[in-house]
Image 1 (cartoon, rainbow, N blue to C red):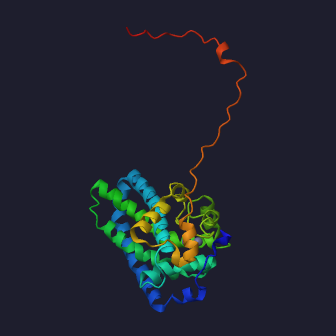
Image 2: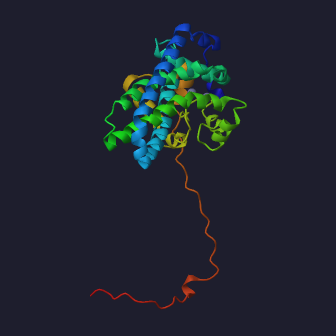
Image 3: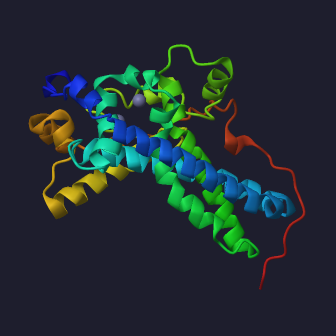
Length: 282
Ligand SMILES: [Zn+2]
Ligand SMILES: [Zn+2]
């Protein structure tokens, strides 16, 4: 990939995009999200306690769905648009572009800058989940799943930040080793140019599957065919983006070869014991 001539944006210009108004927006998002998620938890708790297995399976599914959402949002911000766009450009695209230029910058973000964006994204689905008719089992399952999704999406940037820290707290390192939050070694795959795979950053469980299924590559081709837009053009420059877009799809997984041990005797020489015989149908 070294011959791609990847052009990267100016780091200080990207940093200047973090204005006072963006910070106020993030603080308001965190406060609103905290209220929304507390309300949802208060509504869910008594009903989830009555159906613990339903609640546990919904929580697990929500956790996996959050990993998928983290991948889709990250892919969109990495691949399309520009940091100059109003609101979305400054609040969502700029931090992802900055992150490719300087991976460690995220470790210098405080709580507000790390978590403000994801709080904003999570407000609407969290409120919607709290408004569902929870006395019906199906809606209770969906609402509990959305609660887990909301909390995991809220945590995603924090998990991502921890994956870039040289010395995260011991409990965090233990969770990373257990692959319960994004492990740094796994996330390092995304950080090699042209940043075109392993987008999921909650826990990363879906990354290899989405890569092998060519999920994002197929979406990119469909969007290019429909709109003419070139994926990653603003992030890495037109020339490199063209090369990446024309790369062949990733290889499909090979099944492991299993060597069977050589049998010490000829199968034909074995006398099988007589057993009860089934009567042949007429
Ligand atoms: Zn990225
Ligand atoms: Zn990263």
